[in-house]
Image 1 (tube, rainbow, N blue to C red):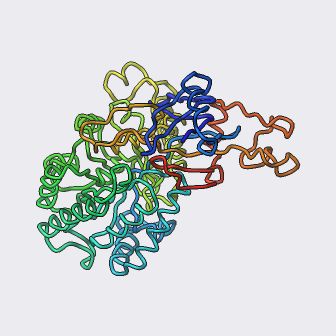
Image 2 (image 1 turned 120 degrees about the vertical axis):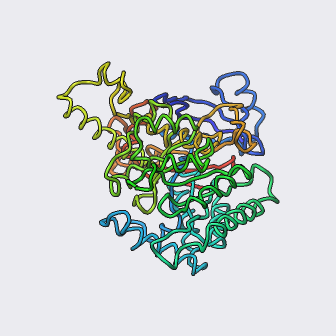
Image 3 (image 1 turned 60 degrees about the horizontal axis):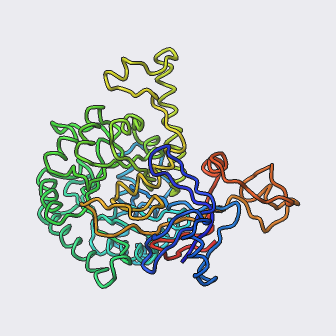
Length: 480
């Protein structure tokens, strides 16, 4: 299949690439094998030899962008998305989160309905890869894996491991039973797609100790051993709130050998600059959840500092601690929170820019705490893909896999975005009003030269109405 039009991606933070009139070719297994300007000889040869029904022309005012990656989402909490956010974190967990998770474990029909709709909403919002927290019960999490496979998106599904709880009816009896259940879940998820070719397998199991307050030392140690034995990824919450267990969250996870290049830790708002550096040394990634942090954390995550210290960072919606499933919204919150942190720093320093002393003691880089929209776009696409060990997030041929990652080549994971609709007129419902407003356009001239400013306008104002199509591994799963 051939796609001709404009493409946008960020291979590195702030490295926005706009590729005008390019031709992208995808083979039968969904892998990109050609990406050049449409005027080159190889591109012209492909265009002349391909049947017309296998050439998709991207219209003016549209572009193709990598799908979004959501690194932190509590699937069962989608049941009550957007409620209870007035409570402190631990009260909210007891009043809403644990009850919802237990309810889905008891009602598998409800779980299937909730998870099926969750998959649909993720696709609607352009999310092509998601890291999911599930519940305690294996069967419920298998339903989650099945529904994500059916939705066609890449899902990393975690069965919760927790042998400590403030809710007596929602806890695993012992650490050994919890570990045995985690091992069983890994085997069952792998069996779920074992009959499919590699490129058609969308789901993977993830070890998921909920967080330090709900996991005994014995459980964490056992999960660390299981991670080494099976090679699966690990996810949890790290330093989301202040805990008193004789050592820091970071030290506890280090001791259990759960901080690895295959680990993603959510929040990390209470990590010191030195601890961020230690996390970078482990190769562990962070799921930055700016919206839920604003509601539930007394501290905000120092995103700029983490990036400057070499930490791999992506974005998470943290449903339902965050009320929006849209990663584009998480990008905007990430920039907004970073600007607030920088404003507070400037006020404290009397308006002084970050100087040599700040940089020398490692507390802040030359750019202060600020983050721009291009960096946020990277975090929501390529940054998340890197954290998950995926080859997506860029349009290039032969992108190398990390040796620790699953053995799949680069795959085609795209979202087609429409800035305006050239089929309408300018008389009230034309390109001046739908879906975004571009006042320099008229019905006489519908040509839109894609620039960083027009992409920024979409980044600031766009929503799912702009989304006209979505592909995973070359297979179209959304039609606009």
